Image 1 (cartoon, rainbow, N blue to C red):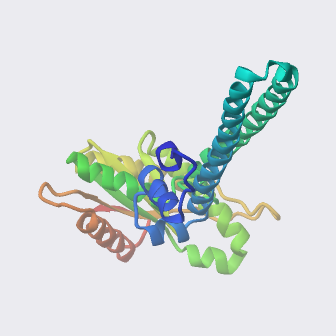
Image 2 (cartoon, rainbow, N blue to C red):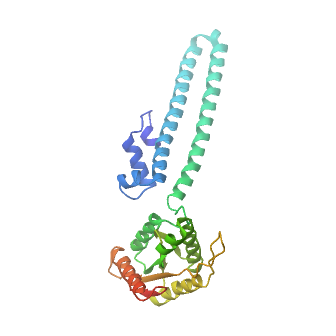
Image 3 (cartoon, one colour):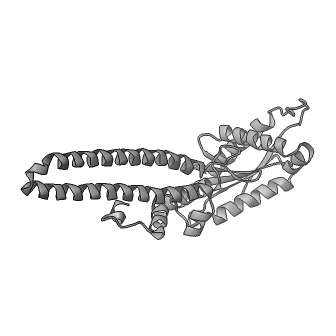
Length: 279
């Protein structure tokens, strides 16, 4: 940013977008800027930081020019020394205050940006990682060429929960399943894949151990009592089905492994639900 605005040059919109992509985003401009409110806020902050820095640079530049002019006058007009020095001190104090105010605003914007970047990878309902965060982690694992498993977990008969009890109760069920999965699969990454689906990323486990871990999380959830908060009416067990798959040695992306996990999930549904299968 300093290099771009050196000499008082105004930062262009394209330059701000490029900075955002380089240091914040990892996708195209259209997706990075328009698809996510958190990224929109980050983009706005990048532009605003450029404006603040430019204003501060302009203020100090004007001050420096006045100092130079005052020095030239001192060389031949010593009688004007007192008002010149007074003017310089006034300008110095003003510039100092402006820079201090700019620094405070930059710090406030930095804190907001940190919050926005954090929120951009979190699911608002559950507090788990969202799909963007999961995609980023899968891309990182592909690049590292390390073995890993993915498990796609889907709440069983979730539509009937919404139809019978309403979406508020459905949201509570999603939050409860999210907490149970996160606890049962710790320390591995668990995120909300979409709707009532969750994704668990399991690096450095073989397929048998990965299935066993997710299956234990399934059993633990099934043993939890669920009552309707408003009436204390028992809702019965809440369960999920899951499909687990391992990335192949020669696979260069995550498409195939996710497809295998999804296919295993649908087999688990077809075989009666509340089941974990490998694919």
